[in-house]
Image (cartoon, rainbow over all chains, first blue to last red; front, side, top):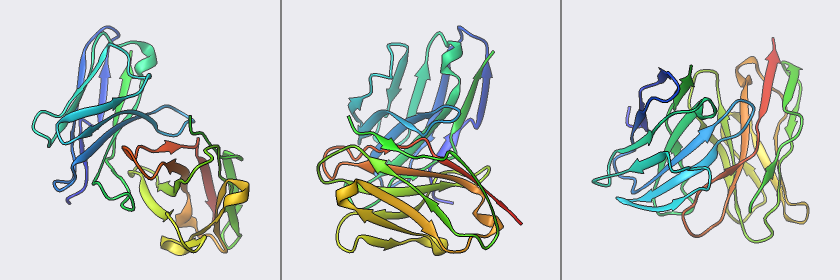
Length: 114
Length: 114
């Protein structure tokens, strides 16, 4: 399968701990997106990379969140000092520069804060 | 900011019934429109997309959607649903320039009863 891969699928942690998620996009895609989805809502944009450059961050992305894409391939999303409100599904998507091509989504990482 | 509205969050219908899901967006300029589907336990998948041209677009699995510019709408339809269409359906919009990030509606949870 050459789709978008996310790890781990599930993460349960105590409040105040740090967590890190990984996304491996489709290899030929230069664009990578992170979204967050909470219960009863559609995915909400968090941040966007073109190659290794982080070009846009949503206001949803507080200072406790940081994302990297060091070599323009895989990306990591870290949440420091997790809070109850961080519980959500974190989705990664990848795409290329062609507007007519849709984004491809991974299965997501479900984060539960105890 | 763009917003996408989907109504009737929960839809229950019997096999062979017709399905129509409404989607309205707020952005006044040129947009690209998408419907994504999420089957239970699976990742978001593209059903269909509209960029330009014929406002009636056909997607996978017998779905179609009609873009009505004057109404800022992009409603999804299927004449006869099957049990396998049980899923969550998301309408999304992006601008045809910039980073292509998607703005999603809240989704419609569709349950088809055999």
